[in-house]
Image (tube, rainbow, N blue to C red):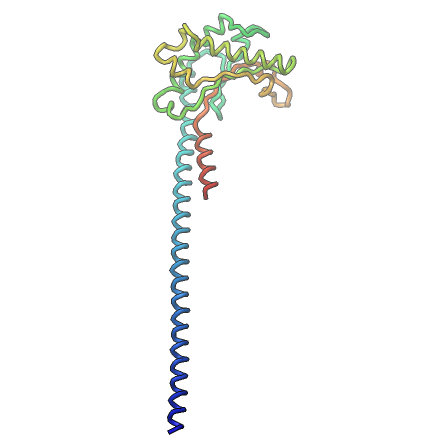
Length: 242
């Protein structure tokens, strides 16, 4: 009888041990399942973030491609608009910046427009703004810049003052009160996006041998700036967030 009892105790012990091991195994299995589910959820979230990031980059790239296309279209239109013009001007094929020789606008070392300079601006400005303010271009325009440049003769401050005064003289003639260059109904529209500044002798034009081309360096440039800076900043913000 004693043997039976001992045997029963041994069986109960092993039964309890196996139950405990089964419970531990179940716990381990549950932990593994929960871990797998958690990792799968993290993986799916990461994949979604990656996909969202790629979608945003593609969207921004499309916008940048559109901006690049717009710049090319503007340059093409400017060339077409001035194709039959006798104006002494140069259109940069890469940026679309237009240079007018200072010699045809001002007397040497002067900042008051000559009568010839006024006649040139009377012809230039209406054509220029007919392109950059056209319905399909204007939404992309951030700024129009009238920029004065000098050669390297004289000091920095003298040339800075001269280049600034020339840029402002051009702006005043075209955008000042009583101007006849821009029609009254478009004057405020143009004023909103035009700025004028002088660059002194920074931005010199050089010959192929590296020497300064003083004549070409003395100029007034008309530049358009697209909203690509905002686009680039937007992409930078997205990269920082990711």
